[in-house]
Amino acid sequence: MPREILLRRCLAEVAGTALLVGIGTGTIVAAGNAGGVPQGVMAAAWFLAVLVPILLFVRISGAHLNPAVTLALAGSGRIAWREAPPYWASQFLGAFLASAAVLLALGGGSRLGATVSAPGTAVRTFVAEASFTALLVGTVFVLADRGEGRCRWRILLPPSAVGVSTYIIGPWTGSSLNPARTLAPAVLSGTYGGLWVYLVAVPMAAMLVALVWRPTSVDLSDRGPGRREVSR
Image (cartoon, rainbow, N blue to C red; front, side, top):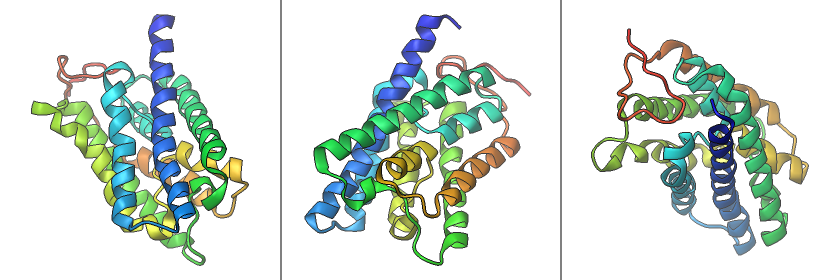
């Protein structure tokens, strides 16, 4: 892959992940500063946090925005493994830049939006995060394999998965589904309790889906950057 193309994709992943984490965790911190908001509002904020960078960058980098999504796409053969490390580096960089911006703009309240499971719910958190990560990866695979669809409606699938997850499991897990989204605010706020749950459950679920959901065909006119035509 030419370096200029890879650089463009990586910059898109930095910017896209920064938008996702900035909008999402920024809403958490702002809500905490204001005394809280209804969970439906939080779910809508995370829906937009995923949708906006997808709309902006899907045609450039594929808008992975999430190390677990990149892992699943590589593990399933939808992108080449050599593309994964620069994507991961870009996603974590974007997440840390966003968390730093939230800290500077809104202060360090609400642990910068770090994902913290409720006391005594480690097992339930593990299962919930794994289950909704599987749902998210499934929506990404549908979009990857079948294209955006008429009027680009399939682009709404991954943001919808994140929004539903936020509404259902957000109150007790924080609804991560994304190692970069979890790690950046955790490190900058010094919140490490139960961090392993998210960093194990999410990639594990993503890889399990990748192993069982192999691509059957990819329409060349719809495939995103980095994808290759697969026929089985």
